[in-house]
Amino acid sequence: AARDALNSTIELNYIEGAATSSGTGIDVLSSTGMAYSCNTLHNLHSGIYLNGTCTDTDIRGNTFEPPFADGLHYGSLLDINAQLHRGNQWMSGTYSGAAARNDIEDSPDVFIQLNIQRYEIHDDQSAYYPPSFAFPNLQAPFGSFINAWFPETFGSPWDCEDQLVGDEREKIREIDISVALGTAPTDDYEEARRWGARQQLYRKVALQGGETDTLAVDSFYVSQSDSLLGLLYEIEVGKKHLFDQSTSEQQEVIALSHDRDSLVQRLAALDSILIVAEEDVWDLRDTLFEKAGLLFQDMDSLDQLIKAEIYTAAENLADDNDALESAKGYAQNELDVNALYLSTLASGMDTFSSVQLSALGSIAEQCSYSGGRPVYKARHLLHLPYPDSLRVDPGCYQALAETEASNIVPNQKTRKTEETSTDWRVYPNPARNVLQVDITNSTPVTIALLDMYGRVLLSQQAGVALLGQNLTIDIDVLNGGLYLLELSGSSINRQLKKVVIIK
Image (cartoon, rainbow, N blue to C red):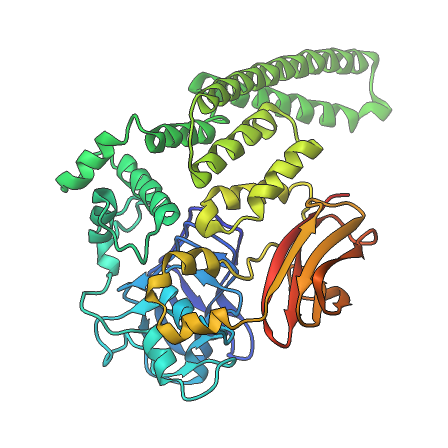
């Protein structure tokens, strides 16, 4: 299972279950920068299940070997990028549910959402195309939904041979060249996502030392070295190496650990015979205890020295981070999260102040499409004080829909203007004991507080209020964490806001 995972690859696994009545091969919830690559899945309830926000995700070269209930299963709350010729294959056999199932909710924007998370395929006659589909929340016929989710386009599939097996480095692909040149399709890479794609490309090329066979990518790597992108990458590298020990420190730690273990073993052997021991044995034991005390002092001194080096390096990285400036929200988020991490965990502090929690919460509750990877980093940090809080993005489509509005057909635009007018505001956020909701609505609505599993914890009705009204929701009995506030009604689309509760 991948829960809030970041920048990792799950590859080259053979995952076999006992029966199709239970078990999921790869279970993903709210992760980013992930690749699920060249895995074979067999005899499971679900081969791959994804839900939550899974931006910058590659599902590529995987093979679904039946039987399954569902081969590929997209949850109802999933936000994910398009899979462009990724070369997944659905072998023939029994899918008691469907080879590809999508629980997407019906809405005026359903075709936009399916287009956002589409699977491009180059051939609809082979194993690259699922033999069956299911859309439990949509009305039949499903042909148009299938075509929107799995369109057949020109191109060639990504192949497992394109990967350097056994090495985390990857070859530079055509889409990477487009990203480097700034010519990637605008409907796939609006500004914030283009930034994330360039970050990923920069990491990939940096792992290869800039030695690629593509001049365009080579020049991109060189040109970005002194840019905000390159400088932030250097800070990322510095953060990863903060807790690395030098060779001499490693050797000293190993030697001291060996001496400690040897002393402990000798003391244990002496203690086993103390009941019949002579006086010289007691003297030897006292001597060993004295040596042990000196040894532990040496270990403590080394530990303090190593920590001092880490804290100094963290302080230097924080200074470098503070020197960078950005006018973009997603890049500024990176600077802010870096500053919070370097001033707390990297500096030996495992708690956050209320101001820091509020700053993390304001980033964590952003849509990761527009807020970028730091949204996930902030959620990771918030998981420390709130370990029971599970974060699922119920919908980040608005950020993409706004940039792709030109793709909406006229009748869809008309439906949006015909929706009942409702305006609402929630404060304070983060909150402790109560939430205040200011709402102006021309039709009765229901306001419900949900946990991150979608369970209703509190619910309140609001009548028509053309001039506005204020509602108070008592949250004193709830634990700290991230929650969803849902607004629903018979003539409005379901709306959600994230709320952070601090205790």
